[in-house]
Amino acid sequence: MAIQKKYKTLTQRTKKLLAGGENAAVDYKKKADGLHAEDLVSFANSAGGGDILIGVADAVRADGSQYGEVVGTDISDGTVLQILNKAISCIPPVSINVFAENTEGEAVLRVQIPSSDSKPHCTQKGVYSVRDGARNRPLQPSPGKRTRG
Image (tube, rainbow, N blue to C red):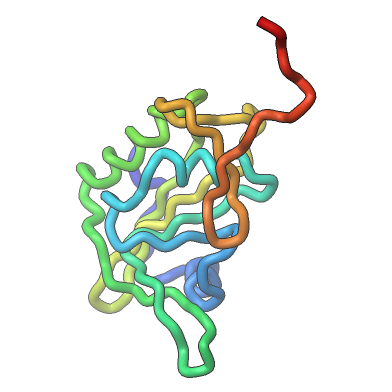
């Protein structure tokens, strides 16, 4: 699977995600290299899923509120394949949709991660996490379910 759809401009959804800052449903990454399997797992394990905007940096308005500033990213097949490989490497693999969007001079990739029906997901290193506010929070085993050995 490659890019789901390419847009010549930013969609209304992406504009809204940029305006609201990072939260439980959105994360910003300047480059695809900054995206980790744990990010994908966290959104897939969360109740509402979420979106990761690649080519976007954190910025702060004069009033102190945060927003996403488009800095642009490479949207070549190699970059998209890098993202897809991270999703496939999760256990079980995480389902994602990738969209390419553009401003007048910069491109953005929007990686949409729906909440999964196959929860829980983990990374190849066995890390289970969920989105908690604007960060990923590791999931811990439930207390009380211990085995004696």
